[in-house]
Image (cartoon, rainbow, N blue to C red):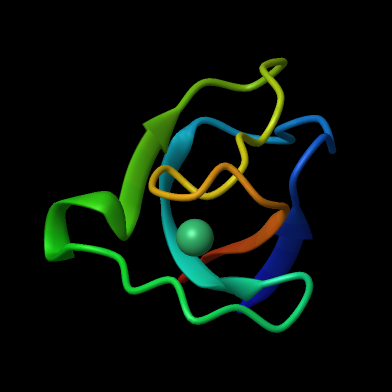
Length: 60
Ligand SMILES: [Zn+2]
């Protein structure tokens, strides 16, 4: 798996999965907030729930 974080550029279009917050958080995401479909050239978003920095990974 390849891991990215909030504010990085998206290298390839695809479905990315939430892989944790960048800092400790008690935030609990809903299932539908744990995956995003995003297009190459866009920027990885923060956590969809608490808006804090987050990690995203793609399963190759
Ligand atoms: Zn969060």
